[in-house]
Length: 52
Image (cartoon, rainbow, N blue to C red; front, top):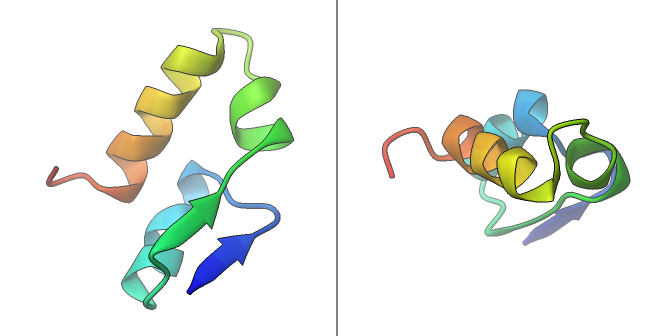
């Protein structure tokens, strides 16, 4: 199941726990972050998959 729209570090973990196996994070969670895309992606992964 894919979840698209408004996905960020704050709610991505809940989506994954509910069964989502694809999360689409875009403008808000990744591309508009002041520290850049790479840092935003690292932060997102750490929030959604803390044990990985």
